[in-house]
Image (cartoon, rainbow, N blue to C red; front, side, top):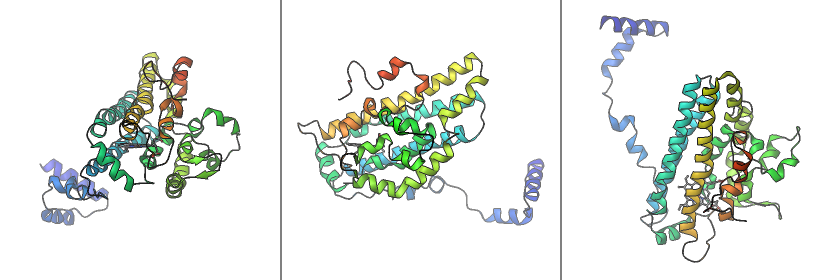
Length: 311
Ligand code: HEM
């Protein structure tokens, strides 16, 4: 006991604090409890449906759960990209990201089977032009994982020169396809609202991550590892690329099909995209670490015998 008290005293003095005042303050501290620590009451006030349809609450809560899981992925990415880490720990953290994404895949049944089709197709009418497309965390994650150039569709990459400004690159990104009409040169409201709010932050993140993103980071690590270490790192990166850029998008697309297509007519999405084409991983070809996949694997990205890409 005396030892620990002395250690605390030394620490406080080293920080320039007065140990006696600090201890007197401690005397008045309330005991910590679960509900304040986890902020349960605040958390439970954050669900505000816009209609009286009961299932809208499921929709809001599940989106919030997803945003929290994306926050966990970003939490790992911050450490992976912005600090130096021992290779085994690096791999361990990549598998955390795989597990978080796995959680999103398996829990999506809460949406796909857990909401009334009728309720969803009523309350969603009051949500337009809002869309999950406007999830900023989803975009931050891709900017931390890979190079901006790799988020530009292959058929547009020939427009890039070493002088192309980052802002111009953003106008070519794959996700412009969801809201930008290249014939009329106009963006829809979902896309323009989103960019107005977040584009400066995205550009800033892309600039910071230029040399630090995961795709660059692993390449600087590989030559320093032995064969076993290289294999472990490559396997973990491939597992995340597949889980995040094929498996999760496919579960999401299946859910969109359930609610927007299953009863005979194809409904318009709240965000206004040609959603069935846009959401398919074989169309988007969002691949964070392309050099870790063979030519055949790249050619078959997001396709399988049962799931052919739409044309
Ligand atoms: C009934 C459930 C859902 C349906 C029908 C649905 C439908 C759609 C559609 C049609 C789009 C394309 C953009 C548009 O035109 O609106 C989209 C995009 C998106 N949605 Fe959902 N969604 C559902 C649930 C979710 C959930 C729970 C999340 C979690 C945050 C989410 C996140 C996203 C994201 C991140 C995008 C952009 C994907 C990309 O750009 O690759 N969605 N969704």
